[in-house]
Amino acid sequence: MAGYVFTTNWFEKERPAWEELFTKVKPRKILEIGSYEGASAVFLIETLAKDFDIELHCIDTWAGSLEHRSGGLDPSDMGSVELHFQQNTAMAIREAKNRVDLKIHKELSELCLPRLLAMGSKNYFDFIYIDGSHQAPDVLYDAVLAFKLLSVGGLMILDDYLWNEPLPTGKDPLRSPKLAIDAFVNINLRKLNVLSALNSQVFIQKISD
Image 1 (cartoon, rainbow, N blue to C red):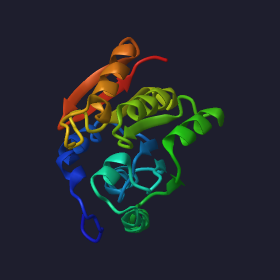
Image 2: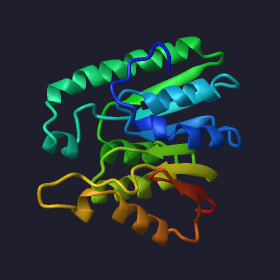
Image 3: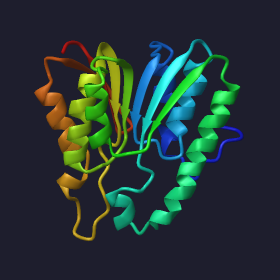
């Protein structure tokens, strides 16, 4: 990603699967929970806005999460992360061939998702990417509400399925997304298809409300 500023390469290992997916599907209304420096947002803008207008909603507090704080991240460092997001997405939008309606929601997903539903956005989004908090209760909350915002036929990617927070006491299933993703998929088994689970990401398609 020439010209962009990214201090991590977390998204790069997922890029091949995303590139393959977006040769087959062309969402125009997109929601992502957890944006960090904007690597996934930039990919979506570059990939989709070259062909048509898109609407992209990004939810993030840019305040750091529990695993960031327990890992010793200074919350003040998140200011530079947010600045990188702003610069990176602005650059991608300037280079886009078509209009990008970027809507930034700087708040907790637990507040933003219910408001989007209350504003009439049920079944609105064609594609949703969940990569916010990695705590199991938060992941389950995000998945359940985001699924209501997803259109029938729309796609959702849930990130970090196999991720575990490095803790002195060892693995804690409640501080990992896997338990929540398993519960969400099992409860909605008749409403979705699991398309793949590659590189710790689970791809699903909504087949009914």
